[in-house]
Image (cartoon, rainbow, N blue to C red; front, side):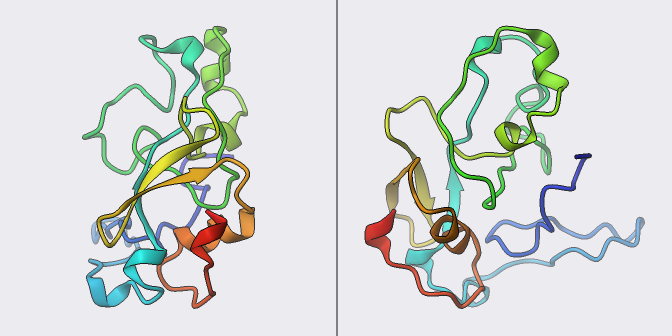
Length: 151
């Protein structure tokens, strides 16, 4: 899985902006009107899973900081099951095929991680959330119903 293969970047409230110099056909700006599934049913931001065995060391999804832009340091993808932080001190793991871990939401909290929904509320989401429900809450415009009690 190479860079940018983890999703189209067009269905979330925060989307990749086009680069006219590269012919990029990504999403433009997103306003509240574009969040068709409802602001209380759509994730705006959330915690990311990390390899805590390499904290303070270079790892491909935590080496540039929060201002890194459209990069693994910042972006997480709603079609991977959320997982807790993991621990592997082997530096070679940072650049290996652990895409499902590098792209996942998660945290070191037992049982789940926190998200901010587009309405500004903060909600915990369980690691055991159905992947289908999680995909729905990560997509601002799929039109699929969400039962918030399943978070």
